Amino acid sequence: MSTNPNLDGPRALRADARRNYDQLVKAASAQFTEYGAGASLEDIAKRAGVGIGTLYRHFPTRDDLIAKVVAESTAAIVARGHALLDAASPSVALARWLRELVTFVTTYRGLTAALAASYVGSGTELCVYCDLMSEAGGALLARAQAAGEIRRDANVREIILTAHSAAWIAEQTKDPAAVDRLLGILFDGLRANRSTAKPASRRQRRARPAKRPRTIAATAHRRRA
Amino acid sequence: MSTNPNLDGPRALRADARRNYDQLVKAASAQFTEYGAGASLEDIAKRAGVGIGTLYRHFPTRDDLIAKVVAESTAAIVARGHALLDAASPSVALARWLRELVTFVTTYRGLTAALAASYVGSGTELCVYCDLMSEAGGALLARAQAAGEIRRDANVREIILTAHSAAWIAEQTKDPAAVDRLLGILFDGLRANRSTAKPASRRQRRARPAKRPRTIAATAHRRRA
DNA sequence: ACCTGAACACCGTTCAAGT
DNA sequence: ACCTGAACACCGTTCAAGT
Image (cartoon, rainbow over all chains, first blue to last red; front, side):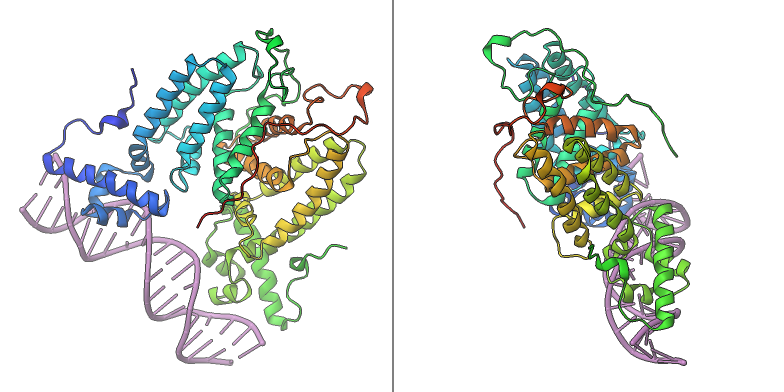
């Protein structure tokens, strides 16, 4: 089902190369935890017991290394998204998934910045992440919209990026409680018209899809150099 | 009225030192525009025609330099906040102010990150910014809350940080239109219960203050090392 | 095929020496 | 008082030499 190339690692590898590769990933994970996603590559190589050149051979860019280190967590979150499609309430499913996404991108300092930056689609290895996330989140969003619980003009990319921004704020302020409050505000803003803040009285289940709200400005894709 | 120590610069300065100081600020502004808030300090000194030591003498940290460079804009935004207290609608005044805040923190790449990080209160020179902004935003927020237009449990710090996060997203995605959409969602989330997304029919002006919503988790100020 | 580490080009920061 | 720039301690990245 899931086709995440980062999970398997490179296809064929000489025995010693394989060992080095694995050591590098392990060392990187440890260093990232300790010093954040900007940890010294030299130190990672040292910790793995290999030369810096070996690190570069396996992971040409820092993002390649990050991608491999978070590959499993990424796959887990994506799977979680698919699983949540079975949850009773589409909107709480989406909310819960976003909350878990934030927890994930918060595991290393600087991770959320790296992931969000790659979310533009710069062509780096990290963009496997983008596509998988968009797909998983998109399904949850579509369901919540179909149920009339979330505004029709919301789009996955923005929602995921906003989750990143909440994570970023929490990182900056070092206030872990901030993400829940921000996510709460965001989510109220995402609600379809009527149901906002009124916690869904049993009466108005299966409401018709909401009319298009007018608050959000139309997208005008200007892009600058 | 405004007491922003960064506006005046240091009190007494030898003529040549004064010249160097001004050149440094000018050079920094230019380099920040070109390379972002992380521009090379060495290059700034070179551009200003002084030794790197002179830069450090006047601006011990990068934040000190940034603070001076954005001092005028900061003062302008603060003044704008005070002026907006006279606007007809408290909530659109707040919205407009936030939008202008975002425009400001977006002038240099990396500015918003620097400002948001300092917003924790690390004791750097940049925190003049924090206090002035909190004060200006706080007044606008209080007025909007008193009018029953904005949730009572919203607080300035978070709102300002969210504005930063919107700016950050725009920076990451290089999509300038993103900030308006994100700010729109955020603002709908901030609205007091009833008025959400229903664009304020003339009928319900001067509504009583809204009851406390329940969506936002209570603050628990844990702080970690 | 794969690994190593010296070499290069960059940073930021300090501080002894100068005027 | 103030300025200068060499010196130091760090980065990331490349690549010739080795096995």
